[in-house]
Length: 236
Image 1 (tube, rainbow, N blue to C red):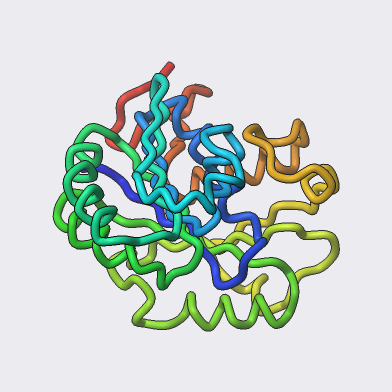
Image 2 (image 1 turned 120 degrees about the vertical axis):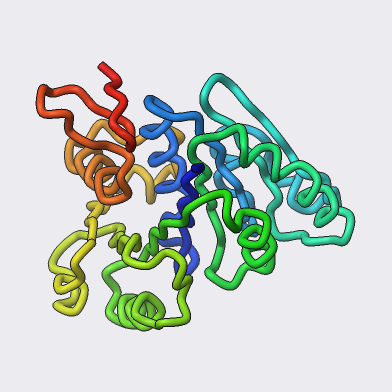
């Protein structure tokens, strides 16, 4: 069965698209990965050069699809039109079947396409959830409120991971008590120069992405230094 991972958050600018891309780059070493870009500004698609900021205002509601090796992107953005919905319903089921992992980069947990995506995926793919926040107390509190809500993607069950991005000092105590939490340090070069398609060569960031992959079941130690897929197939 295909695995779906929804990467989202309650606040813009928390690094959702960046983390989704880094997670995909790690996962594609072992799996065939599709990113579903539902970010309103298509930040992820722009980061890898699929389009530029002018495309956001062109009025073009076409779905963009790009693939190379184990890595594909289906980019919709936030301009949801009847024509786009029809296109999505036509192409997405086939892509879902052809990939081991789908990472959904959504601007918010209430994105209007998530309900349709869930209906198409029902019975075909499991769901895990990555919820991003920053250490800011207000944002962290709102994020925890959403995470702990029984109505927040109950189908993900206990497959929910909290990611605290841009950690500089201590984080709120309530966050520390969360069972599955990953902390990514503040990286000044990302603030100054914007998102990067590759994680910085900073062991703290690399370790955080590997930890997140492990929480999501994307990396399992085989006991001899090699990695295995979920299901037990050794990858060398």
